[in-house]
Structures are given as C-alpha cells and as structure tokens.
Image (cartoon, helix red, strand yellow):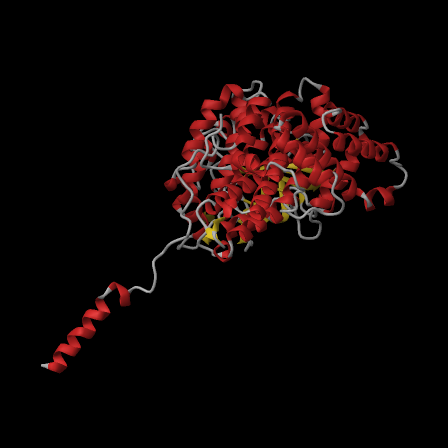
Length: 573
C-alpha cells in the first residue's frame, strides 16, 4: 500500500501545473493586425492630401482597412511559403510552360487588379490619379511584395502599347479590365490579361544594347508588323503573364516587340520557359529564364527605337520600386513599434527607453523622407503631360529617388530586425521576408550605378531637368538654416559640373546623387512636415558628418511625437 501511494503521488506531481509547465508565456508581443494601414500612417495620409489625392481618401482608407485584416495579411505569408512551380510539359508530353501558384497568390492578384492597381490612372485620369493609385499600391506591398511585379508591369505597359495604336487595340481593353484570369489559354478566351517585360540577357545585363536576341519580319517589316524572335532572356519575371514587351535586335538595332504566350490562331507561341529562378527574395513571384524559338510578336514603334519605346514603362516601374521600398520600411516600422509597446526589458517597456526611442524615431524619419519623395513623384506623373516643370522633374527625380530609397531600405529592414531581437530573424515572422524583399528593388529596373549614370545622362541630354530639380529644392529656402547651407554647397557642385570630364563625373556620381536625394527629401519635409520631423531630419542627415547610423539622432529631438506619427495603434487626424 505504501508503494502504491508513492506511485500515485508521483503521477499527481507530474500532472501538477507546477511540474508539468516550465514557465508562463509573458512579456512577448503578439501579431500586428486589425489596423488600417492608411489612417494610422501620418506620412502617407498627409502625402495623399498634399499631392492632389484628397478626393480618394475614403477609397484608400477602405483599402487600408482591408490590408490590415488578419486573413488578408496571412495571404502574404502563404504566398511566400508555398512558392511557384514550373510544369514545362503536361503528362502527355505536350509543351505547356505553365507555372502553378498557391491560392494565396491568386487571391492577392485578384484583389490588386479589382482595386485598379494596374489601371486606375489610365481608366480614370484626373488630378491625383497616380497619387491615389500609388498609395494603394504601396499599402498592398506591405502585405506581400512579390505579386506586385506583374501588377506594376501591367500598369506600366500602357504608354508603350499606345505608341502602336493597332497593337494597343488588340490588348488595351483587356489589360485595363478590373478582373483577374490566371488561366493558361489564348487571349481571345479572356476578358482580362496581364503584361510582363523581358530585357535582360546573360551577356549584357543592364546593357541591353548587347542583347543577342534577333527579330526578323514574318512578312513585311515595320511598326505594327509581326516578327519572329530567336534568342533568350536571362530574367523574365511573371512568365504566366499573357503578353510581354521584349527587346530584340533587328537590322536597325534594339527594337521593342509585344510577344504573346498564345498566337492569334490559338496555338501556343514558341516562348519556352527553361527554369524558374531561385531568388533569395520575392519568392512568391516566379522569375524565369526563357528561350524564343521563333516566337512571334508585333513591333512596337520604329525598328532600332526599342529603348525609347520601353523607357516610359521602365520609368513607371522604377516609381513603383521606390514606393514599394518605402512600403517595406513602413511595414517593418509598424510591426517594430507594436512590438516595443508590449515588450519590456531592464525594468521598462522598450518604447519608453531613450535609446530605443532614438532608433524608432530615426527609422520613422527615413520613412517620412521616402514617402514624401514617392508621393511628390506621383504628383509629377499626374501633371507631366501638360507641365514642363513636372515632366523635367519626373525625368530626373525618379532616377534619384529610385536609387536612394531602394538603397536605404535594406539597412532599414535590418535595423527593424535588431529592434525585435532574436525573434526578428525567425522565418515564421514577417521580418526576414521584409529584409529579403528590400534587397530586390535596388537591383530590379536598374541597379544603383545604372540609376546614377541615368541621372548624368538626363542632365547631359536635357540640362533643363537639373534646373527644374533645383527650382524644386529651393522652394524650401528660408525654412531651415541647415538646409539652406546644404543647398548652397550642392548648387556649387552643380555649377562646377564639367560635361567633358566623363571619368570624373561617373566616378563621383553616387556622391552627388546621394546629396541630391537628401536635399530633395529635406526640402519636402521642411515645407510640409511638422517641425519636429523636418528639424530632426536636417540635423541628423544634413548637418552630421559622415554616414548616419540609425539611432544617432542629436539631442533635443522630439522623438515621442515622431514615433506617434508612426504608431499603427493611433489613428491620425
């Protein structure tokens, strides 16, 4: 009996909470969800109203509410966990070149296209159309960035197609349709289609004039005529798009072609997907390597004018790259503040600790500048067709902003992970995905060097673009003495530019573009942001010597008010 009682006592002890549980889960954060991505974001909300999109505030807010729902945010996780798979042939041996995606990817695509993220400025052009569409696209990128690739390419393709009206007549209405049809079937069987782009080849990269893909007329040469393409593309993103704008060589030089996956007679085009790329980021989006084995496509524009034909598309996708990078900053910062409000260490909540406040406020300043820049470029896109100043500004500042904002995002994403600590590098959190996405945009649509060389090219070809940029900077004159001195130094550099010193200009291009970007962001913030934001930005970015690490704001900065502007738990007026 004594032995049995002893055994019973041991079992009771094992079942006891004192022995069976090692600890209570406490002092940890929970998932950020059920918040409005628009109404809690002061920088975005103010930017939309300021740059001409006030009429769309309720529309954007409704989408912001949707983007913050837990089930919608979960789509981003699922689309990146279950990545695309390629079927080159069906089980009977027929060539199909079909990519299979998880249902979450299709849900995100459907939502984006129904919201008009690919079409709104073209179907409903008005002041602020690019601003409103941009705001919604930037919020969508916070949920999931990979599917944004086919969305932005579809959006950006319209100006190129409209250069060839008879080809645009075939595709435009279906491109602009607010529907999503992922089926691998001929275009005639679909009401809505998406557009991809292929420029890069392995031997040339960004140097598209080194492309080796050739195009020869099927019958008659000339704009709008059908050509046969033979060659390859090292990167063709979103291979399940229905039609692609492709660069290939004719006897006149690099030319642009609209190459569909299915030919007008209902047969599959000879565009063969060789493999999907194993990328470190942008996992939900299928990027592929393809070969053209006599694939047919229509010539868009003149032979030999392929780069000017497609450059408007590239400009728009670069705009989306900068806005999406700003969106990644916002997503990370919102999650970090949410975490810091719940997590305590060394006797106080992280959000109340001075050094963490310095870091969080500094990260918000980075985002403030990036979003102000992106929204200003959206207004330039809205006005550039009828306003020479805006057209010049869009030409130069888009390259400056794409370079700077995209390049700042990776360090920003990493710093967010450090705010979280060890849990910030766990793959079941959002932070590693944000970091991996952040390194994609600086390279896609032209790397940092390409953007800086484009800045030099634009200034050399059209000096008026630099005058327009300078006019924009100087609108903030007198608003901040640090900025005034910085602009004086930058103007001196502009005056000393020597167009004959090609080596010197290229060697120092990054230094100049860095300064141009900082001056542009500072000018916007001095004019439009609260004094706490603009003064801290100028003091930390313009007055400081050397590179600025996050969390090194000078004394006297009103960090609490800056952090409150970023707090996803606070609805902004």
